[in-house]
Image (cartoon, rainbow, N blue to C red; front, side):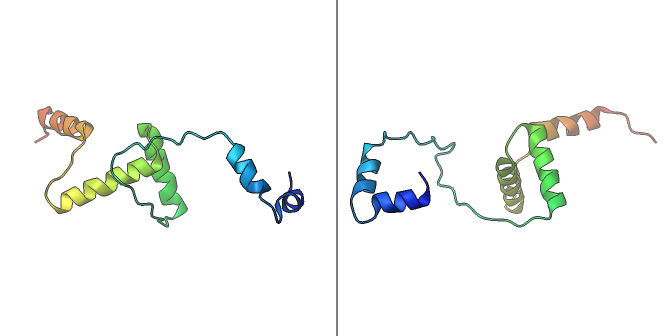
Length: 102
């Protein structure tokens, strides 16, 4: 139905409300967290966004999830409760076990 048909059909009566009442209830997606979330807009240069997207793709996660992880890690660093990924710990340990050139 186009806009003109909808306007003619629903103008001045309860047909729209009746149509809505006839619809089957829809299942809403289950949130992936118990914590309330706040949505914020961030302006990034295109090149920066593409780098973030590539990093997220490489990790198999969404861009928003990766950005949230980076923000949380940065905040943890500010209050000395730093979060370190297991991959970073493994790389650091591997570097320690390699002999250094004198």
